[in-house]
Image (cartoon, rainbow, N blue to C red; front, top):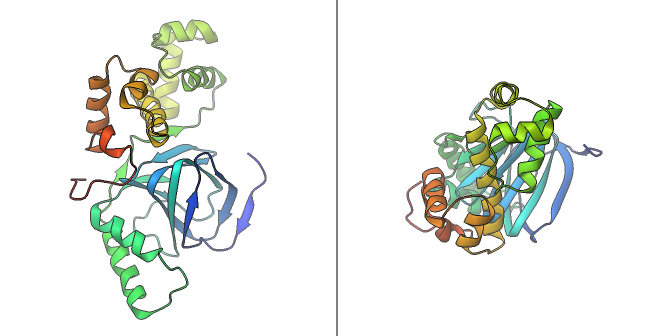
Length: 254
């Protein structure tokens, strides 16, 4: 990874990022909640890449080198914390229920505000954060084995590639059995589970850039738009059409 920029504290801020804009690799002494109220944000560390739509936030523990990338016009809300109410010591994707969403947006509206009402708002935010659950479906771990990395690179370039693990193994010089073992030992998931995560990752990015749902479905490897919509709704409890604008539907169930 590139040179790490030190930030003594995790800033609380609202940053408006254009599609494709990046925040270079950096580290800070505090924990941070990263929430994109519009658009899609991804965070990359040496452990992998985490991506989150507007129904999710990303937890970044203190002293974790990380970089950001925005997909689509992104409103990035950053909340710095000295405490760790969830006890998480690695990056994670968290569910954001409607009240927590509004608290994060309100708290980052004016980071310079040091009033008593804002301190009370922070206390409620921390209480509500403890109701969040970790979402495992949006992480793409970083492969260590070169054969596994080669397979991941092929499908990351062309997520619609429907070749079997055996055929992909032939392309990279590894047996299906070896690759299957590597997916389980390095990623703690099966090859089909990882491929679905990869396709959802790419789908979120394309939706953030306003591509039609049918185009997204076929580009990412689903046989039909309805199959994509079904998988998306199972994962995010909403449809891809409802999320193309970025912000959650008011009253949606999370």
